[in-house]
Image 1 (tube, helix red, strand yellow):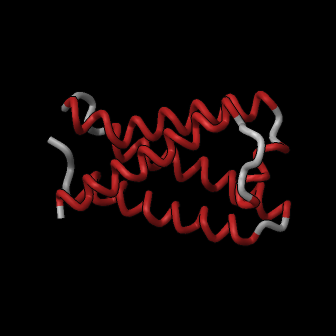
Image 2 (cartoon, helix red, strand yellow):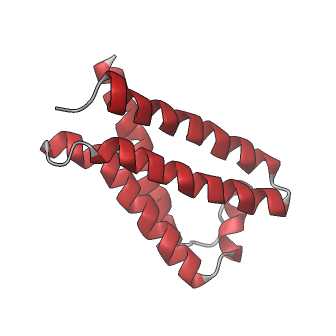
Length: 123
């Protein structure tokens, strides 16, 4: 289970790092599921981009470096808060597909947070 949890942390961490970087470059021609990015203000892009990059790094780096390992479940919790804000954004826009995606990500993050906090804490 420990290896599968690590794999999940790395995949989710890289997902958030990539998504955070995307907030800084916002290329033309994004798929329809990401068109909402064009409507965010520049400050919101910066704040969410930094939060997603830091959260993604928080899922991966503490376990690799063995420094601040208690930060991993906290990073997952922080990303859950960010995803809750995303759900509110998408509900207001009527983007139910994105709401479902955000809920799925919250469930995965809650699994990581619980496992790393209670069941398999990093050493």
